[in-house]
Image (cartoon, rainbow over all chains, first blue to last red; front, side, top):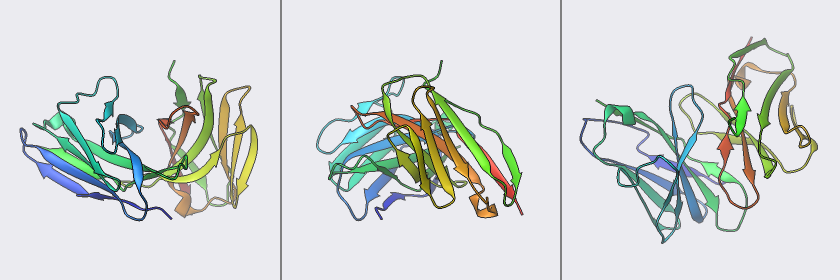
Length: 116
Length: 111
């Protein structure tokens, strides 16, 4: 089956620093990738939709200058949390949709971000 | 009213029990219905996917959709301790690929 990886799986950083999270589709090409955030005991909240070669589309309330998304290739999207603060501590999950047109999204294992 | 409502539980059942998980949604434009299972500190994995009213069965899992009532269900037969996880319903319209998730129901199956 389709596999999506994320790196790193967890990261601890100091307040004010920037953190980059990678999302890769390992055995398929993904025109569209999605970035979600999940707080403890809460559901996944879509942050942005990332399309290869174009600007990401951000959901209402998500600061595009704080959460920088780059989808430079059909297998890689990155999310950079800039000037991280403790309230950005969360579980960040990406998903990828196959270029072939399947409706299914394949999810990565998530990245646990803790900002001290 | 939220687009998708799901009772977060927690739900605790003995091994072998039949589990019923439910979601309601408000937008009749939603056409595709999914159930995901998420283990602690892991990403969600797709369990069931359907786009029509009625039942869809896969092993011990049955997904049920009632579009007239805007109600979806997931039944787990002969539940096992390994089924212990958070179950999330997700829905989407046909016009885009955005998924709207329910809050998730935490299920514990006790041996």
